[in-house]
Image 1 (cartoon, rainbow, N blue to C red):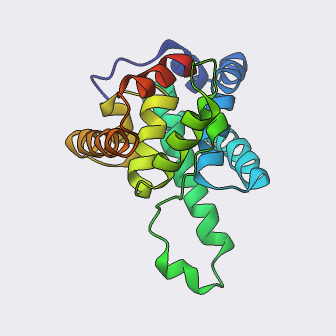
Image 2 (image 1 turned 180 degrees about the vertical axis):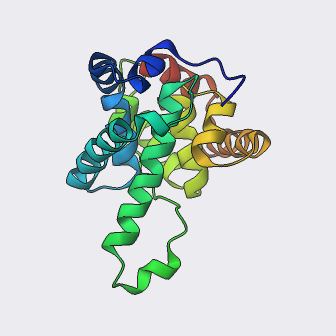
Amino acid sequence: MYGVEECPLWKHFRSGDESALATIFNEHYDSLYYYGKKLVQDEDLVKDCVQNLFVKIWTTREKLMAVKYVRPYLLKSLRRHIGDQVIALNRNKSLQGQFQREFQITFSHEDFLISIQTTREQSEALARSLNSLPSRQREAILLKFYEGLDYEKIAEVMALNVQSVRNLIHQSLKTIKNQLNLPTPILINIESNRQ
C-alpha cells in the first residue's frame, strides 16, 4: 500500500521480528480483551479469538498491509474474527440468519469507578443510561471513551463513515445528558482515565 506512513513497530513485525510481535501483543492485549468482552460475554471465546488473531497475523504477516495505527487495525480485526466465530458457533441455530455483526455491549457501574470522582449511584445511573442506547451507539462510545480512538479510527473499526460515527456519538451524548441531567464532561473524564 503506497503512501501510508507505516508504524515502525508494525514494519518490523511484518519483516519477521518476533520481538516486535511480542511488543504488539503486550501493548494491545488488555485493550483487545476488554473490547472483546464488551462484544461477547464468553471469556473463553474472547481469549481464544485474541490468541487466534495474533497467530493469524503472524502467519500471514508478509501479506498484511502497511499500518499507521496498530490498535484500530487490531480492534477491527478482532471484531471481524469474533463475528465469524459467533456465526460458526451458531451455524446450526436459527440465529445465524439474524446475525448482523451488531454486538450487545453492556456497561457496568464498575466501568465508571476508574479513579474518577463519581458516587456509586452516579456510576450506576450512567451505566443504565449507556445500556439503554442502541448497540451501535454503545460500541461507538466504548471505542471513543474507553479506547480513546478518534472518529476516523472508530469509523475504520466499525466499518462506517466518519460522519456516521460523529452522529452516533453526538446522539449518544445527547441522550445520556438528557437522561441523567448531567454535564457531558463526566464522560470525557472516563476517556482521560482509560489512557
